[in-house]
Picture 1 (cartoon, rainbow, N blue to C red):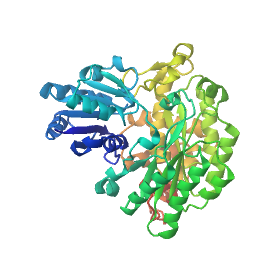
Picture 2 (picture 1 turned 135 degrees about the horizontal axis):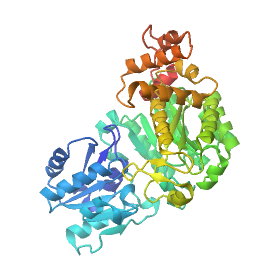
Picture 3 (picture 1 turned 180 degrees about the vertical axis):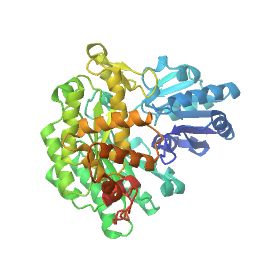
Picture 4 (picture 1 turned 90 degrees about the vertical axis):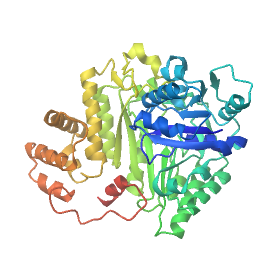
Amino acid sequence: MTILLSTLNARYTHASLGLRYLRANMGELQDVTRIAEFVIGAKTTELVERILAHEPKIVGFGVYIWNVEETTKLVATLKQVAPHVVIVLGGPEVSHETNEQRIVQLADYVVTGWGDVTFPQLCRAILHGPKPLMKVHAGVQPPMADIALPYSLYTDEDIAHRTLYVEASRGCPFKCEFCLSALDKTAWPFNIDTFLGEMEALYQRGARLFKFVDRTFNLNIKTSLKIMQFFLDKLAAHPDDPVYAHFELVPDHLPDALKEGIAKFPPGALQFEIGIQSFNPEVQGHISRKQDNDKAAANIRWLCEHSHVHMHVDLIAGLPGETVESFAQGFDKLWALGPHEIQFGILKRLRGTPIIRHTDSFGLVFDPYPPYTILANRDIDFATMQRLVRFARYWDLVANSGRFTCTTPVLLGAQPFANFMAFSDWLYANTDATHRIALDRLAALVGKYLQQQGVQDAADLLARDGHGGKQKAAQSPQVAAPQRQARHLAA
């Protein structure tokens, strides 16, 4: 008798925190529960073969926006060759609009929302009776102290080769309508001392890269300071063996006590992901996003100028009421603040999010297939939205990659959004591609475009970035930071 917990991760380096939470909370069933993670893009029949090799009685799948299509094929095939295997679904993608989905129709049971308590209970009923009559089971949210933490279930291979996802809290008190966290009533913390004890155990086993998935790391400043001090103590004790931590921050909440702690971190030790999403107050009102734009901008500027934090700031194109012109103004404002990366996202209609209430009034048109990206709205037609999608892709390849740190400011000039949009349009016209553009070809195209724009030292700029000439003298620092961040630090 085996209970198998499985999911299709976007990359091998992504270790599923959700599966580990489930296994940690299986109680007396933990010994017969196994985890089998896969990566999207694998052949379905091979995955079915590997799953059935465990001889499972129950298979639980974590279903997300990035894997639902492939998981649907996997479930369908599994049901064809092994109809006796009981399939239970969970995860954000199947927790809302459940009855509309083919994958739900194929499966035996679904757990919506929190699965820590409900999934083990369902498994007991499947195995020992009475047989559950309902297909859909609403997840029970237990007291946080009753949830067993999963970090001991990260294997030595996980610690050596994969990103370790951790959380000091769940939920979010904010109501941004494009986000599933809008459905939360608040944020719920784990006991901080218990949590840090688990982080200490991971550290002693060799963990050096910690990615916090908390939606609002800096909501409780006392807790934030305790967590940051944990990492500062490790850095002070072993500066030659650095740790790296990633946090999501609320942009307009950065008191002096937190700034003081942040300023102590050396280069390559800390990354912040900050969601601005839009600088347009009218758009913020439409999506129920409360944000002091002046404070947010001042905090980002302070972080860029007075700390060594790697800054990753998010904007979303396609929000209700956001025109190309107003988005461009926000983009230019954000670029002027100096973050290392601007994550240019395109609005997606996540199942269950309140953003759908604007469909008629703003003419929102979404792709019916995952990841449900917006195709057009009242203010941005389909062709223009496609240009924005290409802008986002090329921006990631050029500006965010850290491979064109000398070239990018010249490419953007005094009108960053307009100039990069012109480059994006030109690049697409000359390649007819947004993927699989080799780095040397991309560098050559950047150089050609700059020369056409009258930039005399384009070749020198590219050479300083390490393309087509003498490599930059500076070498990437020896830090725990991921390679892309290290390239920015070395610039």
